Length: 348
Image (tube, rainbow, N blue to C red; front, side, top):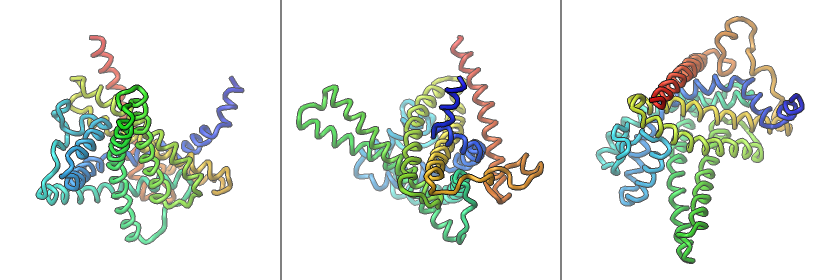
């Protein structure tokens, strides 16, 4: 048993996990998730409004995007299976809807989304043991707007990329009359998965490099981004199954989507920070970054820092972290309650 434990501790995955824990990854992920929860709905509204307006002449492609989001987040969009969904994306919006819904969602998204981007950047930099980014605040906010827009486009383009790859593969298989064969179906599934993986990889590169501002060699960045992309892909499958299952239970119908989103945002934040810790561990061991110093731990001794840790050296960020702690505790209590409720329903 000791030999097995020693082998485990010698792995890169364990060292990355240790770095994640030493930097208070779970607590930081909770704070990021709390802020991200208030950004996801206006982001979806704005994304569907703009994307629907652009694709108003291509309803099939718009329906593909809607189907992708509906599979990933069951219950968010109104459809035949979820008539009580939060957003109605049954048809592309009109120009009037673009001006009204787009303006409202844009303001809401900027207010909540910029706070989420700033919190995620600080959390990622904490994995690299980097201090808070020092730059012109106006320049930082302008860049954050660009990062936020890029992230939104990347998420929606992953659905379009999957559709394009699927259509191209079907066309190619049709040339050899193999579109209905087992090999054809397997090839479609594999290429579609690779397309989504590529989109998630690009998303993680944006988070780890462009948003964080950490200067990483390409090889180290690629390793962390790949770990994050695989984790997000697995989470998409699991989250769809979880939310769909919870939404079918009468006891959970009223709040399953909201609770599911809270938990989902927390898991997404953890995966992103774990991928950052993986990249940081790789870069440190290759001599591209200095060894992690005790700076990830409280810098000043005393009960104040022990009780209320922060994102970094500045105490101004402690509010978001405390909110994350409350979110994590709430999610744990709710999760326990949901499990008991599900067991009771199954027992009936």
